[in-house]
Amino acid sequence: MVSASETLPSHAMPPLPAGQRLRAWLYRNEAVRGYLLLSPTLLVMVGLMVLPLLGMLAMSFFTQKYVTIDYSFTLDNYWTIFEPSSTPAYFLGIPFYLHKPIYLLLLFKSILISLASTAAVVLLAYPMAYFLAFRVTKHKMAWLILITVPFWTSYLLRVFAWKIILGYNGVINSGLVSLGIIDKPLEFLLYNPFAVIITLAHAWAAVAILPIYVSLEKIDRSLLEAATDLGDSRLERFLRITLPLSLPGTIAASLLVFIPTVGDYITPTLVGGTSGIMIGNVVQSLFSKGNNAPLAAAVSVVSMMTITIMVCIFLWSVGRSRMTRREI
Image 1: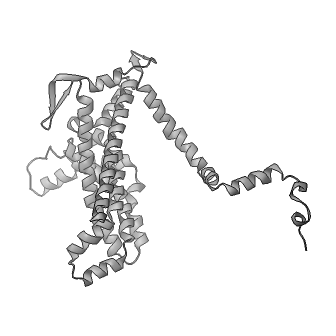
Image 2: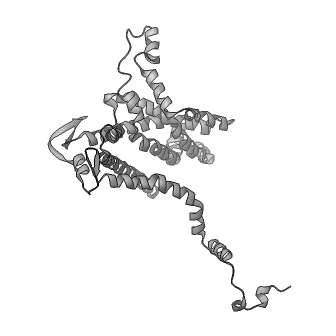
Image 3: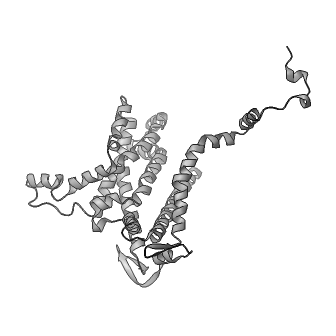
């Protein structure tokens, strides 16, 4: 049997309908098909993330005039943040030569608290992920579901639970008093940066376990067996094989914890007190009680840029270190 396309010359073939031409064009362009599949997600990201960020960036160049906003372009908000001063303000012995050092000082303090929280989270999460990947042989799915149990409750409730645990008449103080270890409740457990770090570490530990577990689970067990056959001890095998191969998951977990905790304001509000406030509390206060949305937007932009630069430098240094090791 001979088809119609073989019996008729190409110029005599009737044109295809528009729908078929569009289908054929999409079939030839793989990139366009990919973007079409992603279009719902891209629309949501543009509408809920990109546009608000652009709006906040634009707001940072305006000024607040009592109850109204002056939409004239100005850098006054950024000058307020970075205006130099001859008289320094000190934090942990570090001088801040700024006229209003509160913004950058609290940003620096927030970064330190987040770094401490991230370190605590990784130290808590890594042994758990290691246990799941190398020791648990049955019912792994049940263990993974149990890890997500803290996420079944509200983040606010989890933070508030630590306020009850660390409070003046909380679980720890009541237990120590009942056991006769202390005569009166300890006052330093709550409303300080240490309480913020503990609460953040507990609240975000489950987030860090999963990426570390995935990286550990993907490690080829034959490499560990080969290291053992070549005489490596358990510690040497861990330091030379397990830890380097699990670094991608550990780095991802660190970033997943560090980035959102810098701007957290619920935790320092509930358990931080006056000594545990972070940059997120200042931004929230400027937007609400301070009625100065442009300055709050400028502080937010500076915070985001600082965190972005830190993360880029961190990733660049990690990539450079790995390339150097490969060359060696």
